[in-house]
Image (cartoon, rainbow, N blue to C red; front, top):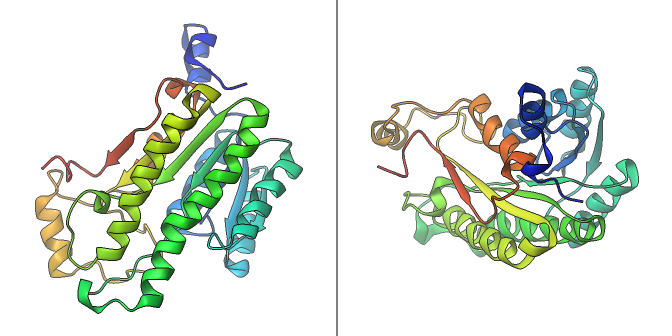
Length: 268
């Protein structure tokens, strides 16, 4: 059964449970590094049972050992989200290991930065297959399990690029725009079945994709900081709260939302 806020008593203890994820089974794609690994550690420290996933076996093994060393109940399942069968096995493995899946965080993602007229077909396929097709596969199989168990929460990692024109990110932006519509459509379709679907749309984050953008001090990045009302990039830790909230009973009446966490960039 899915949690609802009215099931929790008032008072300090009740409110802590309301915003809690203790005992929940949380599967996170793209969690061997960057935002995904940091989210996994946060959920785990709050008492959630964690399933890490990535196509990179070496990074995945290291991440699993790191979280286990912190006392987190964690398992790792290798999966390439571009593969239908891998995503099916990921969710199946999660249920086999923990008996259920309460939260699916669709987070695996890549981008290729170049002028819009310069993308080759394989580059388009790589970005869209990872960022959109992969999200659909993971959400699809997670929802099948959640329908059987009576509900759950699916959280997509979107981006401010999903709704803004950002030079050099044409294909990435298209994929994330698709994620937003996938989020809204799935949310409406599954709302009466106990499954909530929401997205978090990060702005500019320090260490969002470790090693992907080693040089963030570019003219465009500096201009982006000028356009961000808070005049800085977000720290990874500043994204934990929105994901925890959307996974918790406190968000029991929240579905179909795109939550921008961007220092005011989209609003400006």
